[in-house]
Length: 254
Image (cartoon, rainbow, N blue to C red; front, top):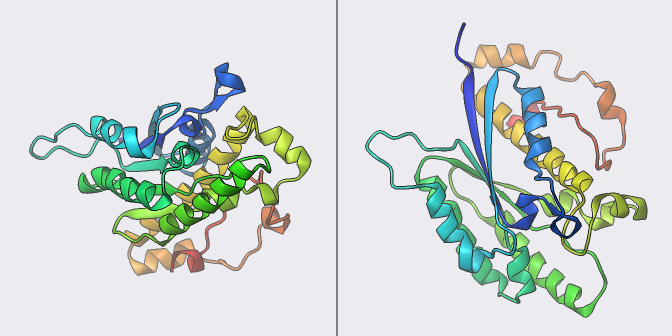
């Protein structure tokens, strides 16, 4: 029996990665749902996910040291400890009024640690917060600048997913907000599952693209035979927040 291909993932960040909910009485990391999405898409993979979310941590003060701890000095011919590193950070920095340009500079240093070791990085934009206070409005402006900097950053093996847009409050009904949001910053367990669903779909698409790119052209064409077929799941509302399916077409990979 052939050995299963290994997929090793590090989910790195603050309380939003740890899955903090209900004043800390429950923790439900988003990777729970993400792992399910990946297992459904790649049943032949052996998936291992390590979660390193620290409540209250900031990109400016704690992220760099903690990321270095995840990547101890390599010995000769050592393989990187992870294939993918998913980074979500900046929420606490924005709350402490750290300038977005400074947060972004520190994020690039954090991303560089796994990139230098041959890992792929999926950088996530920062979700919005609930409320309508002057404090929130000020934070929203900084968050917008930071997310634009993240979205515009280009580097080999670094990919960006716009989590802010995927779970934006503007796309949520009042019922959805009660279901998915716990407090101003954090999410309910259902909300973290929503994040895992979205991040999982993004990672599945990236892995499919990587897998197809490794195939000879003739085999790629066979994989995408009848690529114009419309699946039943695709006829639903494209703005739906809780869809759990992934459809990847050849045009998505070009």
